[in-house]
Length: 102
Image 1: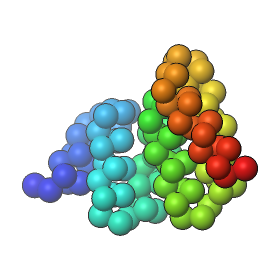
Image 2: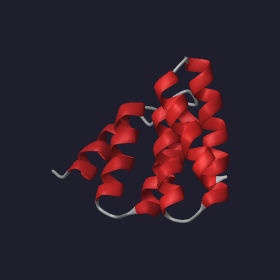
Image 3: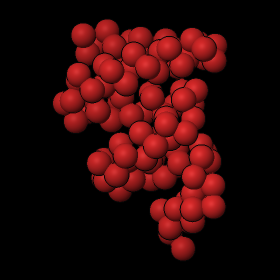
Image 4: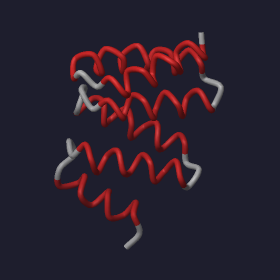
């Protein structure tokens, strides 16, 4: 069974599983399926609004696609989540990306 199928199977049993949803999004990125990855990141954030890596990686993906406004919106929400969870490392990285895009 490939990674996408295995992670999808986990998510059928537990749609809110942040680790599996993030892994599925990252696997889609590694295979060049950015639209599918962004959909998974959106679901991840809906189910787990404090899962900071979801904001960070989706913002980076949007930025690479030239979708700066969407990336900035995702960063805005990600920075708020990083502040709520006291994730200083991700906070610093997302603030730097926001400055690059602004």
